[in-house]
Length: 337
Ligand SMILES: Nc1ncnc2c1ncn2[C@@H]1O[C@H](COP(=O)(O)OP(=O)(O)OP(=O)(O)O)[C@@H](O)[C@H]1O
Image (cartoon, rainbow, N blue to C red; front, side, top):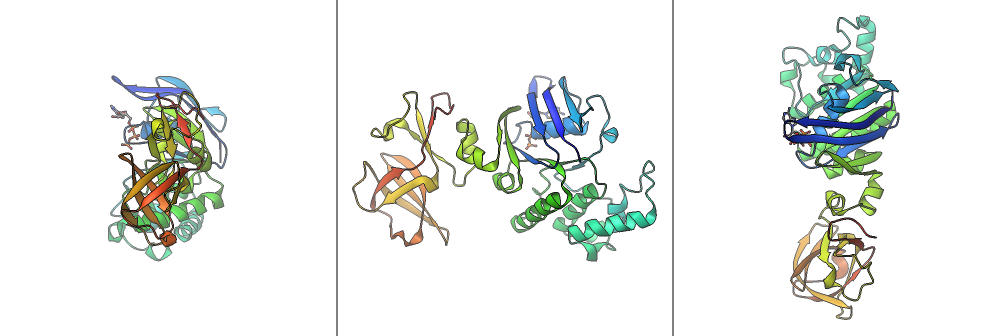
């Protein structure tokens, strides 16, 4: 395994700056997730590490070696793409064995068998080893694609939304397996996604990307609780953080530069009695089973809060709204406290 360092890496495609002065140090065994919306530059960042793109500026280091000028094959990385790319005419076993049997590796056949069975066991596809790739379901195919990346034991694993083509149930199952495997192997992983649940559950640290720039990097908890700006605050949380005009809470003590108050759904205390400084009216309740999302109208601003179903609140009820752990943002979106 190895650490990865990106030093001031930039990449343009014509007029588009896909990656801008990206600096990132990934420790050995760390699981870094780059999170950002479509077009943010995530895939390009990954391709720069893989050697599939050459940076216009900056350097890439893997395991302390400057690999900026090296081709992908010389970098000891494997790459899993969004769409599984298996050899359809080969069995699952042969698909998994393929990277080990390359002419440059010439792995002994008993070693190939051992490695393939080991990976198949990790991914729970041992009973499929004799099947053709085309006989598998989408989820099984993607497991094989991940298995093919794992079998080689490279220094670094690069994954580009590997679960995005799967249905929700498989996605959550494979998410758990991927994390377990990464921990078992102590693998260094760079993973890109626009899915906040994947980022929260998989990452040792999340790097939030906006228009090719790394806006913030930190543990999932710190990114969630301590976002640097409104952009980062809105990347995590479902339903999203409430962003409310400062004027809606005139009695709340806030830094003078505050233009917007951010408050997460679980940080709103809602009381039935009409006693709080700010009152609103419940206009919609989403019942999720264990919890309810309450949609509240406060001076024509919609606020969403998370409440216990036993709270006994109903549509039309007048409620008092109190904020816990509010976040304060300036007019340019930067966090002021
Ligand atoms: N080969 C290319 N030629 C021209 N423009 C490109 C190329 N690759 C990427 N881009 C542009 O660079 C920007 C970043 O693209 P990139 O694929 O890295 O984003 P992304 O965050 O991975 O998005 P997605 O989640 O949709 O894959 C986009 O504006 C994209 O159109």
